[in-house]
Image (cartoon, rainbow, N blue to C red; front, side, top):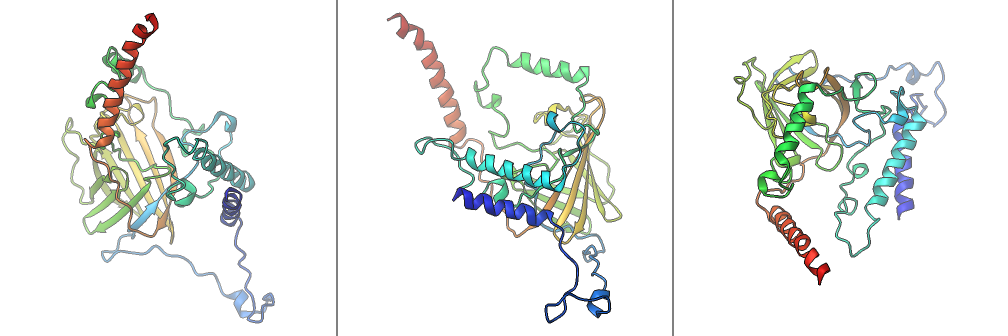
Length: 343
């Protein structure tokens, strides 16, 4: 089965990368000649669809699963793009690793097997990408260095946690574990990376599969919320620049600690539909209290058939209880270990 799957994935990669021939064919099947009317017919130009109020239509269901790393790996230093062949090879190797990873445990080992549920990246629409990193600026494909203030902030957070474990109580668990995670950017690279965009004359709504978060983005030019009033996913304001939807987000809480950022985080997103099934998504993150300079990443988003699945997560469910109970059981076992050795 594995060989058949990988063979089909390899064929898919080559289909995506190999240009489609536009040479017209005569009705009989013979190649069209220079005098053939079919050969002189220009290719139909795709135009951006419009909503009833005349804005570019971005509505529908979109996904952006990919295997491209956020930051450029050291082995690709100085190489911004793959060749077509390298891109296909990289994609196939990533699918191979992903497929094998789900089956490296024995049948008795409980493991979430995304492949069985058709939720692995290649199963939900991942395609080869010629970029070697999602970060396009700085040119080295790396997140800029942290500022001294950010390093101090990290040290203070670590000091605050010292003396108590990661699983001391619900408040110490990652917010994602508590079903409350959320950041404005849309870089989900696999499972849970689906989005539903709905437009109205004065707003754009984006529904995230991940954590069933919803962003409602006003387009009427209203000011951002007062400084100091933060939200989980920030406060977003949108505008149109030609065919591109530009969304600026401020007032982001630092409780989710997006890439180590603070409340000064300013995110600018750009959504540009480039063909019937593809939208280019680009965002720039700027926080002078965290990074020495802004950085930008981009990823293509593919239109899919909806609806998106419900992300069934609720704080206080069995997972949270089991994590804390497991931590207490481990602590008890560790405390009793010296007694057993002495006996």
